Image (cartoon, each protein chain N blue to C red):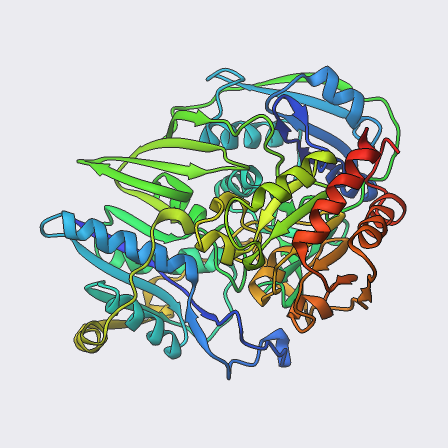
Length: 317
Length: 258
């Protein structure tokens, strides 16, 4: 039987929920699904992953120890595990970490790689992904001995498929890397990962200044939403580039995207057009986003956002 | 010191994409230098200014029209350029092979800069394949670059405010992120001067083709639909806020504890 590995991503010691959609994609192919875990607690991860069709969790450690993150060491360890477990198809998240790690694995294996897929068919080795800043959708077929796919976070739905997952360890013997990691600076604990969030509240030029983003943060906090921004707000210096959604920022697929004072350029849509529900709040009824959203609120965001924050506080209480 | 910059000639984001035969796009539209590659050229030129005797060479793989992007790189301060000319469609595997062959033929790279991704193919992998091809380390999404002798230190941007400080020795490959610098746009004298700089054109067939059993084939390419039928939410701020809470709770089901 064909075996498929899913590279699991952990953040702050916890399993990212977006891993589960990737597990479902692997499970749907009908092959044996193995999860590769490079950090975090394997027993805890297995308890969740076995609900989504994962039959084995392999805790990979390296000669350099388990905890020290080094993308070259990890890529080498993943390849050794793939060879040991006779795996020819590897799936992972197209997060920043996944983009780096999966590409290193594919390059070393000279395997075809499709990154940021929004649909995947492992039986046919095909996947769909966006092209030309999201303006087109391409379907590709990968040919070769190995196949690597990075899945856009939250693009695939997690479908429960309970089974029992065994936990194993695999120790890779890794050589000395050409890249050394001197320091890994963690984000603040209350930073919600934009690409992971169910709800994103984003601000654009209409926010008028950086201080006004506090209104969005206050609203987001009530429901553990993430705050995003358009390029206009980032270029104006109001918020950090880390918050930018769009072509030269992050690509997100939340369940709900609330755009406040964002005109909705092609570049911005490139980063959020796969959101489930788009709610646009804009004073200008002719802003592009008002005709490309699900709910259009033609009003002043400075009236709507504080009102929404008050309502959500009550709901959360 | 030889500093290579790999750039790509891509459709302007604002251009309307049409799909023609063989899943190729209608190329009668405006093309630009891939935006992330502008950061790569900028960083290479800044480094060159600090290093006596350094040369910046822009390299691209593409059709004859890609010369326009090489001219842009020359106007930004690159010294000369190489066009690996090919009319074929390339996947990331053959692209990396062709770029590496052209660089090898030209000289020994000390540094290779490129953008962290191209905005047309969105492949996120060419630089890593080049790293394996040339046997040198790669750091991507770089937002700060520093070099001391052969030692290169960079800051790579990870998720949500996470940064990694990475160290390598030359030769190595740097994938430029948007935050690396603010590209300075060329002035008229720079553009005029760029016209006099040399672009060496080599045929892809002559550059030593790289054959691989692995490849990516296009099965389909279609324009993404933007089907959303906006529904207007109207009323007082209170009423609209209630409506949004209703959407979050009932339609999106993201309010767990209510």
